[in-house]
Image 1 (cartoon, rainbow, N blue to C red):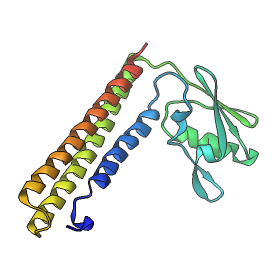
Image 2: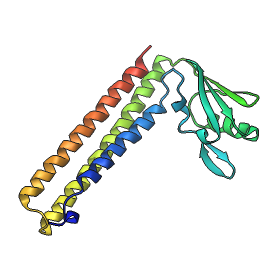
Image 3: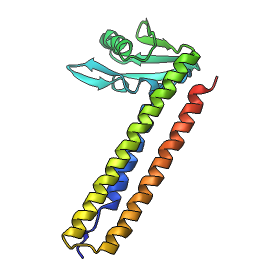
Image 4: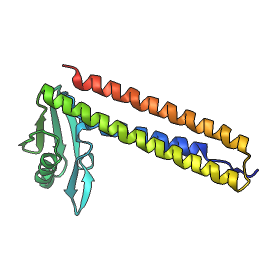
Length: 188
């Protein structure tokens, strides 16, 4: 049997772990009431004729537990960075201070915390759907290989079990990440 005729379990696992990584990045952007440079990860700035991530035009620091500071490298970009932060929908109000932009992180009220938990749940459900789609692609690949005579019915069942184990383990990791994020958000 040629290697190209076997299912690509490593590729399936890589795609599933990619869904987990995207989830972690989305979680990093969720505000928990504490300052974190990751809060600004989704912010893109219109700079030099293209969209650039904020960390490509400025350095982000956490001088206090409830304050972010953004040191813009090109003084001509301060207005664009300030506008990008305001328009990102993060619920923060940046204050320009020369070449430095200070971003106080307001306390989260209970209602806002519940909204954040719902958003985290929605993100994790999207990750679960992505993982299930990868599983479906893998199972379809197995059916094709068996139909074309490249693998036996027994091999199809064994590979199918492996794909299901990968899926279960990845979804368990997604659920664990969600529980951690919910605890982080609801911590008062």
